Length: 180
Image 1 (cartoon, helix red, strand yellow):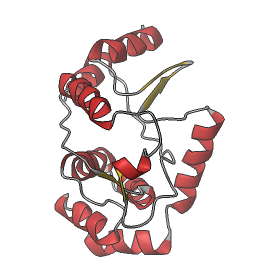
Image 2 (cartoon, rainbow, N blue to C red):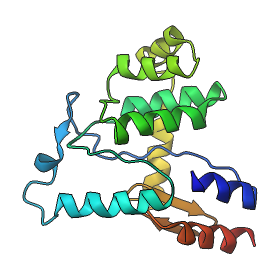
Image 3 (cartoon, helix red, strand yellow):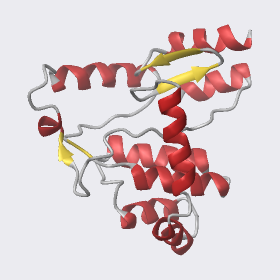
């Protein structure tokens, strides 16, 4: 992915912060058409624009028709970060959700993702069932609210931010402005 080129060129770390994107969604998810019912949004145009921006950054996107509650994925991501597998887990969940259309709100799906990365599946399940990382995600949600973040992705660096799927040049401009 081109974002890795940017990280290497400017030597900075990425910190993933959870955001409450549609936390009201039911466990089985919701069709995008139903989510945006009544809104003046052309889902096909939005997805085409996202796909174009993602392709420029080397990020694959599939044809999603449903969206899911990602709260449990966020919690397991915090656990994976503690196992030094945060980036790999985030990428695997991204692929499962945005490329393969999987329901990453289901415990079994998340345990399977963790296991494919060599993480202990039963420990992953235990972390989810016990709510071990619930407070870390709550803290992220509070931080996002304090920063006025209302959409994902939002890239924050120093006092600057950009929101949405952005071209590489926009991300590089953000990094250069804050790292010199």
